[in-house]
Image (cartoon, rainbow, N blue to C red; front, side, top):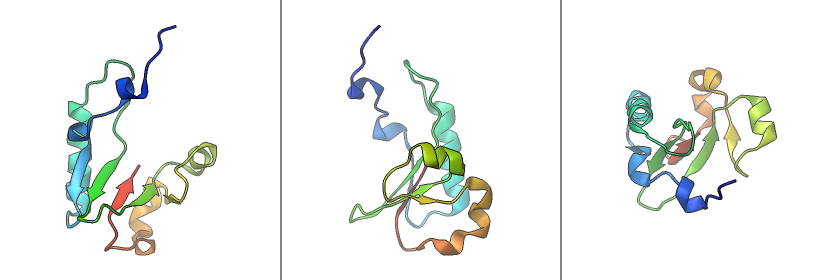
Length: 103
């Protein structure tokens, strides 16, 4: 079995879907779609499910948009779960001023 290092599997930041903190949700989704179309990975069939929203201070909120069972199996400590199908109805639970990583 071939061994891979973390570096072998890392996605370069330039290939992530990124938006500024003043981007609209529509712009974020377009950025995610472009990243998915352009991503080529030699080791996995990984598809982008994250949008990096960056601010000047580097602070972010981790928003998990997967299903509850996926969240229960594994999640980033401190992340907030709002399944993608509920996101439009629960946007008021998020701080609109806080940079957010959606995954």
